[in-house]
Length: 58
Image (cartoon, rainbow, N blue to C red):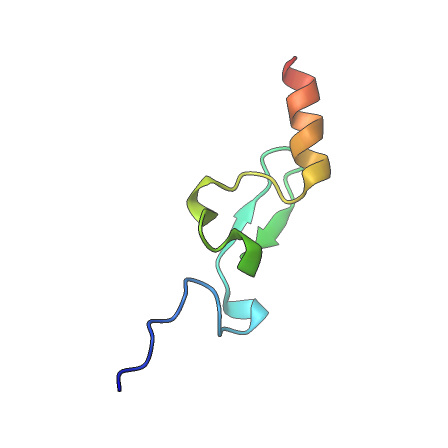
């Protein structure tokens, strides 16, 4: 039986997972399991940064 295909970041040690820079605070953050389905659209490192960025544009 073939092994299931590995996810984008899962199964890798944290130092080898993909990372991005937060659009609000500018700090780097790494791939998390909860972002597995929509990693390409993730822009912010936390809900706090996402909310702050939204408040800034309004």
